[in-house]
Length: 459
Image 1 (cartoon, rainbow, N blue to C red):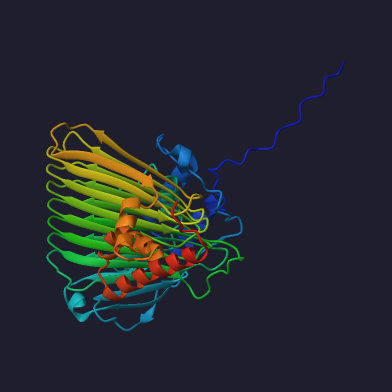
Image 2: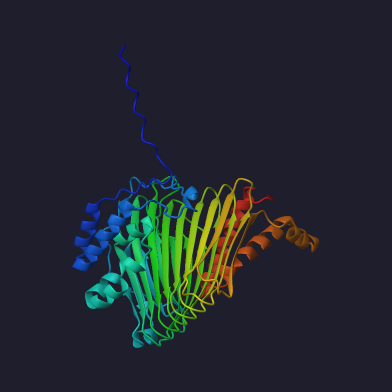
């Protein structure tokens, strides 16, 4: 009797499948179009090798929470040769510089007379490669500037086509913020970009990064867009930098963000990150406190609705002596939104006297939401001032609600006050008053949409 061979099973489509169509030939085409020097071509090629070899998640604590099903990028086309010579634009009040990139094309840039006289460089990476190639090579050190174990960071390193540089010499203090504005969201477009920020010894500055919808952003029933952006920071001795980033991209966008900071002796870095837009957000922040007495403060908030998914990861590594880290992630979710807040503090043997705290807190405003918090510690040096983490996930605190209602505040207004106060730590740190006001307006608008559909009732 002849036994029929079993029918082959179809290949399983795992949650980690990434549908953006990329090939090794794309790396070669992008390098050729940009006329990259040989060292940069090698850097791109090595990065693509890493992208192909790495899994979507290398940390076994987090593999359960990889979910890229919402990223439908099969028809997205890479932005290959963006414009890098934008026209001059007006300097906004209360700012020392503004650079605008629309769907990958540089559309305008301006730098104050004071910053220009101080020797500040604020331009595209292409411009820096053309005029100061050795400095560009110092800043684009792919093996250390982006995490070597992150598949999607290496994809950006391989295929970026537009980049911004802010290079501030030693001792320069900028009185007003530098604004970097990215507009994106056109259907079936994929933009991969890098932003490099370097402060010399004793320099001080503040940066506002805005990620907003472009005029050609896709309609809700159109194709998705993809935006991958890095923000790579290097701080010299006793430098001080404040960075605020407001992400309000359209709901048809998939956004991957990588932020990496190397913090020198006595230097201080403040992150204030707000995630409001996009269909799916995958964000990773890496802080390396290499210098003695270096400090980092990081606050990231999420306000999600509909079926948005926010995948946030933070790694902070203490290497120098007497370093300080204070990291806080907070998410408020409506409708069927989901958030994963994952954090790891690593204290190396050399990091005597470390003081580090990691907090992750989720507020569920609907019974259909899901919020996961996974704070972690890895300690190899017992001589620490503090090494602690905390987390909680749940609905609005009933005691807070009762207190406000007992003062005559209606229930809906009371819930709104509690949620807005929960998210205020990032809003207060935005360095431009106009952007602060806009962020508050965006949060309130999102609340009104949710409350209007009945998705913010007490859970």
